[in-house]
Length: 117
Length: 106
Image (cartoon, rainbow over all chains, first blue to last red; front, top):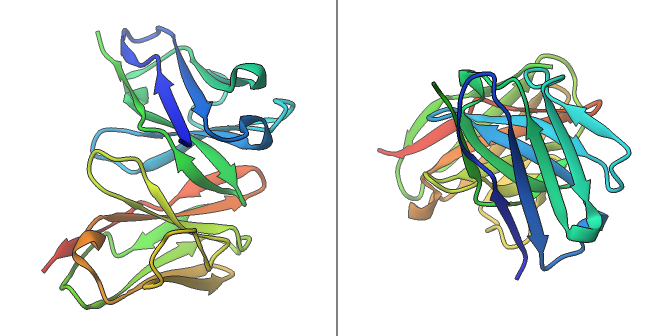
């Protein structure tokens, strides 16, 4: 079964850090660019970051640039997102997704991040 | 590049033809995609590259457009189509979503 499973979300204080993971199964993970997208409560979708097949190129949305770091380990079929200097505005469900023809084809169920004191 | 989706809410009946528009602040590539999202679920890709239907998506969904204006049409709205729809554009290693259109039951 083709699947993406996110984990690592939770409650964190402002200024804190969190590391999200996304494990892929059922397809050749190493052949896809990968993406993180987030959705704040009751709000729309926001692209967060993309990473190339081999991890050599990374791109970030303006609101997270310099604070978030995307990474991958193709040997472990895993995608990561390191979240630093968190603020309340980072509270959201974070989704990982495959990137195909510059669209996001396959999505995980998401992991919830809450930033609050 | 700013992407403006309209309308933000749309009331329609089963069987209706529904049109959702996505306008960009400047001419964008043909890599425009459309997604459907239901409450508590991740988005589902419907259309990519402006008009290519994703595998398994019903043919009542179609996309068109170029330059700064793109549209999603649902021909013959079905009960399972009541959801929120998002457009998403790609340009120069930056991806942007529209604000979303909620399709409600009239």
